[in-house]
Image (cartoon, rainbow, N blue to C red; front, side, top):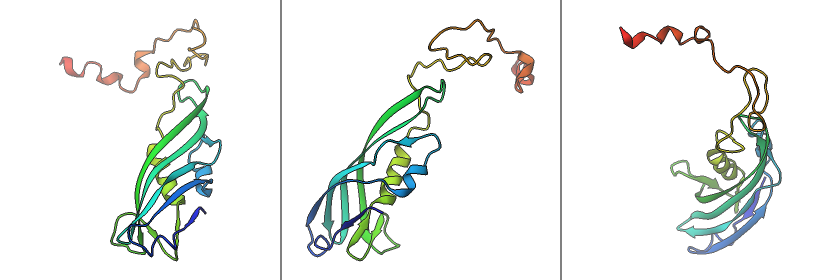
Length: 166
């Protein structure tokens, strides 16, 4: 659990605290199948007390590796995520994360921000040709001699072929 001591921050309205942390939230390691986080995310930013609401602005930087969704090649990638979040004192009526007992935990905020920023599709290249559906060759590396024509009757949608011609 990544905890930041905010005891001095919550006492003074307008006070700020710089954050520079590199730790791995426990849940992050198993968040995505096929995605391996190479090292702990780096969280840099500033916490400011604005009337009891702690506003965190900064960034999360994380390196990860995965496989291309088309050709299965190994990919090393990096994300830098801008963060603008709020922490409130044990209150269910305010949007944002909660804090109490002079500490905030960053785990949930890190996981949420990485979760919404992670690409749904990982590609080695925007022009990736993928694998041959017949022989499985990587079409980025060489062209195979397989016939790539699909049998029209093999498609479940072939019955719709003449739908608009009537």
